[in-house]
Length: 209
Image: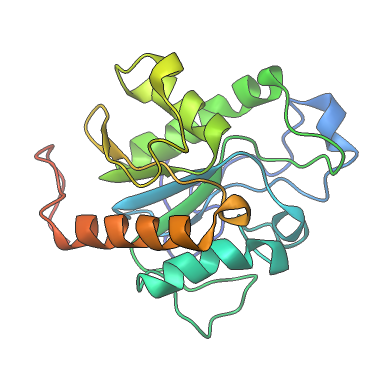
């Protein structure tokens, strides 16, 4: 699978007509694959597309994605004046556990499992230094697959902004931005800014940027 970095949207050319989850094909507007820099150090993973993402085809797009994008802007990872449906990201890739949205419910375990090959392919191709699971479910799914920590020990509130050793990278969990207090937003920003300023890159054969 080759990347097309001329396009930030679905740069790996994943199936945009996927029907692996029949119950999601009717309520979705479109399949929402990952978006951003294919050579990014930072990979952010939510649970499912929001309403704006479902409409635009880009993770965390639209008004409902604004609280998350403001965090990226404050870190210098997203241009402040960029189109909310097509944000201009810097060294960042955005994706979700699942690729389709049902407006009335969260994804089932089977739907997350059906989408797992898409996420695993993105992680392999991007080979990020830092993965940010957004919300409890993303933390558990990614933690189970990519860390040696017992899943029952993973808690997005307790570990919000705390680095967790993964397999070749670190996880830095984030509480859903819609659910964060002002204090939690500030603490996560400070923790992540400190990480960005550190020598966070692992020795794993990455090319220099």
